[in-house]
Length: 103
Image 1 (cartoon, rainbow, N blue to C red):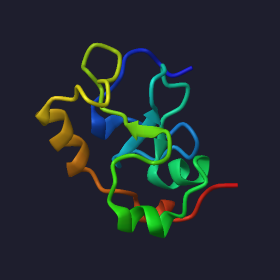
Image 2 (image 1 turned 90 degrees about the horizontal axis):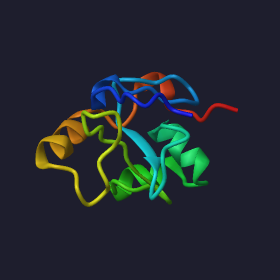
Image 3 (image 1 turned 180 degrees about the vertical axis):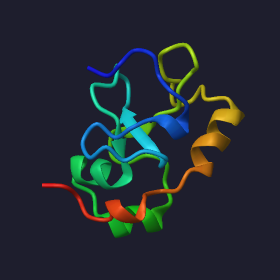
């Protein structure tokens, strides 16, 4: 289970590989049991990294952007205020060290 006090977008950490300072995704319509960076999210959802990067979508399969609400949870996908959208999009898609999925 993810810690209930959510950090800022930039402080969130991928629960699979430990990447931080990058865009993070969470499962849609549920309390996140995992937070995933782009590389790990693509692997989790069986999506091709190159195709997903070219698509420039903010959704990866059933995963949506993990934007903290500042109160220990995450904004609903359609409820994120513009400041949260901007903060999430300001982060890099992936760090150079996380280009390949972890086994």
